[in-house]
Each structure stands twice: as structure tokens, then as C-alpha cells.
Amino acid sequence: MGPLETAKKFFRLSTTLEKMVLGFYDRLPLALRYRISYGPTFFYWLAFLKEAENWDRDRTIAYQFEQLKNLLLHAMRHVPYYRKLFSDYGFNPGNLQCIEDIKILPYLDRETVRGRIDEFVDENIPKKFLLKEQTSGSTGIPLTIFRTKELQEIYEAFLIYSFNRIGYTTRSREVLFRSMIESGRDSNLPYLRYGNKLLLSARYVMVDEWLKRYVQMMTEFKPEFITGYPSVLTVISLFIRNKNLSFDKVKAIKFFTETLYDWQKDLIEGVFHKRIFSVYAMTEHSLFASECEYSMSQHLYPYYGITEFDALGDGREEVVGTGFLNYAMPLIRYKTSDIALRGGDSCPLCGRHHQLIDRIEGRINDYLINREGKLIPRLMPWIKIFPNTRQYQFFQDEPGRAYLKVVKAETYSEADTLYIKSKIAEMLGPLKDSIDIELVFVNGIPRKSSGKFIMVDQKLNIRDFAKTG
Image (cartoon, rainbow, N blue to C red; front, top):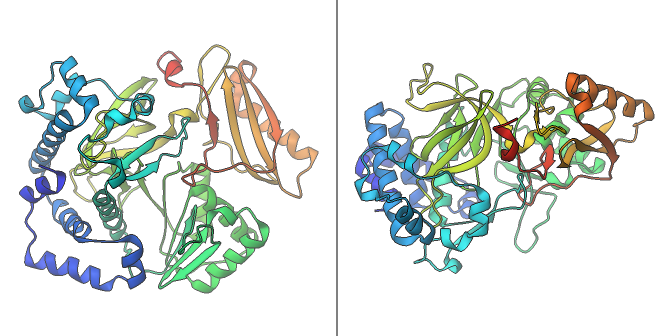
């Protein structure tokens, strides 16, 4: 039994909800229907999520248990890696009594998946019938993930549902910054307008001529919502602030994929005078979360998977996910490399019985390592954009030594170099003599293939140091 069949056991589409989802489809611009390929699966899950938000805790846990059991049974029967793993651990999914029973199984890391990728794919599905995508590679080499088209529709349903909670609809005027814009055979367009959507390429934001043109296009378009990577929105916000421009019709800023640092949040919200609304998801489809409309806490959706937390020491916890929905390539107890501050197990403001994450602290590789093998608290939340710079990124491949790559602006001077060095020393404090950080000036810092920009290009395996550092 797959995830959709399991969901149907817990939910029957009522006439009212059926009209709701059909009405939603009718309001979609034709170009959007064809571009994203919304289908019956999307509309079923959209209605399901609306219904499930009213479930009590017992019904939610019962749903999770059945989804988990069916996933485990599928993995044992059709996925070579799990067939052997379950045998080695004497684990029989048919005997599952509660969700906690999966803790007999070891955690899974991306290095294991990458090294044995063929063993993680459903052996009954030829790969030519699966969609392939890659993670950003923010912890090293990118990881290839196989999935079905149905899973993409489910993910889109979770995404749209979460944005509905802040007033977003398919009719909303929206500016979206994308890593790549495709139209027919052309996959490198600087912009594209269709219906009430204006797509702008993240690749061109660092080019002065296009940056000015993009802001002018945004001004004329008058968006209600702006969606993009925090790193891109930071550049846009700095330009808008310096030009004293305003966007009165903006209702909210939406972002996902990258870590949002406090200084970026303050800058972007200060420029647009609206809150940022974030979604926490990943290419591996291990979990899905979005901010509550009444607070900054993230709701982990229990219908997407099981979430655990692995203590790293000193109060740090790594998020571990078991996604229910990717039967083509299930990842069970998968270590996400994300560090979070865990909240309560329900939301007192909106009433939903969801596990909360009060804060995503960042990626595990956002840390630097000193000469003693100790973790240095992350500099990125503290360091704002350096004056007269366009971009910066830390790089480390040996303990005790790191490099700060800097892209200069035209107005950069030697005084800025002295300022950056003094600021780093101030932030390191008593740890400043335990690591050498050298400035390196570069012409540009490339994004990952997914479009993400990472603040730390960390080549060391931080987990080797985390529990001792």
C-alpha cells in the first residue's frame, strides 16, 4: 500500500472539499497548469492537508504509524539496501508495534547513500522512468536522488498549502528569483513574465546592469509576494535600501532552501516592512516544515514523515528524517546535516499538533575547526555584509586554517581589509589564536547546481569533531 492509499484510509474527499480543490484548479493560469503539471494527486493532497490540520494527536500518530509501517514493508521487499539491513538487525516491519521501534535501526548518512546509491532505489522501477535531481552538495559532493512525478505533485501541494496560510493564492502577483529560467530550448533566460508571475534569474543579480533592471521591473510589476534565496534577496534589499525605494503592496517575503541568518532577516524585513515566511524542506524529501502564521516557529508536518533529533553535544541537535512519500528511493533515519533548536510538540497559537522547531541554526558544515579539533561557534550569524564587498565565503580543508574569499565592490579599499580582519578577530574573541583566517580576493563565488549559495565551503567531516568538540 502506497502513501496515497494510506492517506485515503484516513480521509475521504467530501463534496465541499472536492468543489474547493476543483475551484482552485479552475483559478490556475493555463501557463502555470502546464508548467508545473498539477494533477489529481496534487489536488487530493491539498484537500487532505486542509482536513488533517484539525486532527487530534491520536489520529495523527495512528496515521504516522501506518504510513511508516507500509514504507518499511515496501523497503524490505523492494529496496536491496534495506532488505540486507533489516536482516542484519533482525528487524521485521510486520512486527512493528510503535513508531519508536525504528530506533533499533542505525542512522543513515549521505556518504552511505552516495557510495551505494543503486541499492537504495526500488529494484522494480527502471531508472529511466524516474525523475533525477541532485542535492546542493553543501556538505561536499552532491547526492543524486531519484523520485516519481507523483512525489513532485505531493510536494507542491504541501508548498501551496503552507503559503495559503499567509494569504497566498495562485492569483497573487509574485516575483520569483530562480537559479535557472527555462522556456522551450532556452534554459538561461534573464527573466520571464507569464500571467501574474515574474521570474527573474538569480544568475544575473550580481551583474550591475541587470540588478538595476530587475529592481525597475519589480517596481513596475508591484508584487504582493517576493520569493527567492536569502543570498539573492540580500543583494536586492541592499540595492533597494540604498536607492530609498519602497514596495507598498508586498504582503510577505517567501524563501526556502538556504539558511537565513539574523542579519539577513533584519535587512530584508527592514527594507520591505513585511515578515519573511520560510519553508524548510530538502531534495531528499525526508521532511517538510513551514513557519506558523502566528510565530517564527517551524511546523514539522507529521503527514510528510517522522522527525528525530540526534544530540551533538553542548545543546546542539541534528535533524533526522524518515520521509513517507518517496517509495522510489526511501531514506530511513536519514541525517540531514541541519542543526536545530527544538520547540514544543504542539503549537499553542494555531492549535495544530505538530512538532515545532524554534530555530534552524544552520548546516552542520557552517562551523569552523580550530587547531585543537574544537568547533568554533558559527561566525555567519554575527558577521553582516562587509562594507564595499559583493560576496564572501569561508573555505576550510584543514583544522586550524581557513580562508575568507571576498568579492570586492568598486569602492573597496585597503581600509576595508583592515576592518574585515579586525571584525573577524573581534568575533573569534579568545579563540582568535587557535585558527588562522586568510583573506583571498576572487572575481566571483559560484552557486551550487541547485542555485543555493553557501556561506562556508567546509571540506572537513564536522561529525568527526562535533561530539568531542
